[in-house]
Length: 160
Image: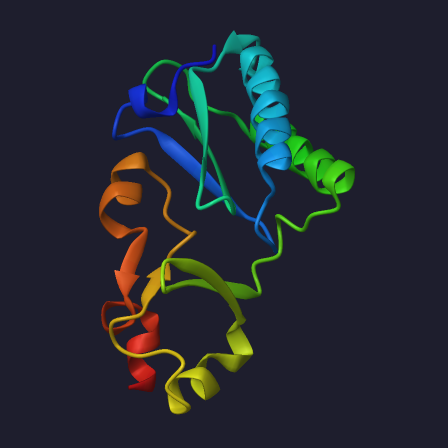
């Protein structure tokens, strides 16, 4: 059962998929349409899931499910990951690569390999106020409070 993402409760479970590049307007619309179509039919053990989606910064696909209505099961989560893989294939994207960290630099998302973080801090490309995205958050409440943090408040702080 599709609902607007903003109408999902703050306790809703979310998954964030980071694109390896900025999405075009046409790709954003395509992803919205295909993902909304998927969410309308998304079920767990035959029960509809109350779910919504959102695309932020033209680079992050968010899927949320209100588990107080029905919980997502392992099989239903597998179906959502398969949906993301289909998007990857049809749009020539990489949405499942967790080897890059996203930073917000001059209001633009910049992706950096984990292995390069120390070097970027050393050369000043990342400073203590650079915003870091934490795509490992699991709830909508965390999206509002913990998704973006200054580097000085993230795991990167050990390099300062």
